[in-house]
Image 1 (tube, rainbow, N blue to C red):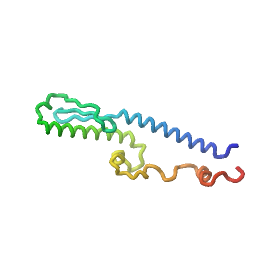
Image 2: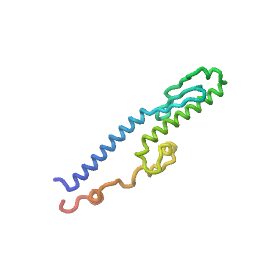
Image 3: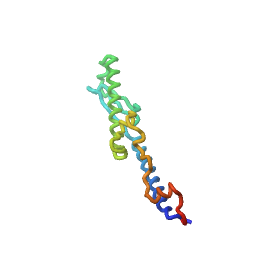
Image 4: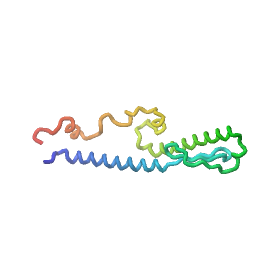
Length: 141
C-alpha cells in the first residue's frame, strides 16, 4: 500500500541523488585546479594543487644563481604563498555559487566560518512531508 507521500519522498530522494552527483563533480573539478606564481625577475616559478601542495618548481632563468641563499629562500617561500593564494582564489570562484551568502572558501579554510551556517537546522521539505516525518502516517492512510 502506498501513501500519498510516496511521490514527495521519492522526489526528495532524487534531489539528494542529484546533489550528491554534483558534489562528486565539484570535487573532481577542484582536484584539477592549480595555482601558479612567478617571482620577480623570474627567479622561480611555482605551481601548487588545489590543496596547496607544491607540484612543480622551475627556475626559468639563471637569476637564482646570483642570489644569496637567504634571498633565494625568501623568494621561493613568497612565490609558494602566491601560488597557493592563486589556487585558493580559483577554488573560491568554483565554489562561490554553492556557498551560503557571506561565506567564502577562504573563510572556511581559515576556520572563520561557523559550520552551522553551512546547513539549515531543519532540511527543506514540503509541509505535508514535514507533517509525515514529525507525526507519522495520518489516520486512515
